[in-house]
Image: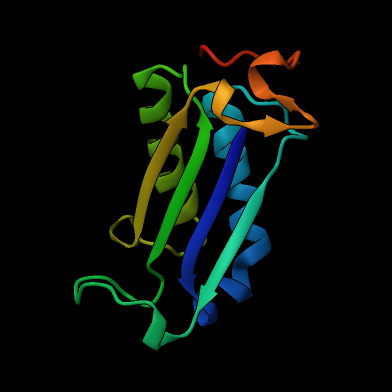
Length: 128
């Protein structure tokens, strides 16, 4: 399970939103071995006055926050970062304009499909 929030300027996100979503999802599937049908993305598009960032970033600047079950290896997370920098670069987003944070929580802190997640039978591995 991974929930993804993508923050950025409306003018930067909207024209490439579907490309962003596909590339981000492909990275998560490849790095974390999640099933392709487990796609949960939320785009938080903001006006310039609502999204303050340093002068060394451009209007393409994105913050990507990923919430997931704990258990992934450090190497899997580093692979995810590398893939995101690489694949988002193919649609014109500089590595300098991408910041990624992973928030990991125990399964018992998630409620999904009427159950605590630690009581669910998952069709994928978390310890990758």
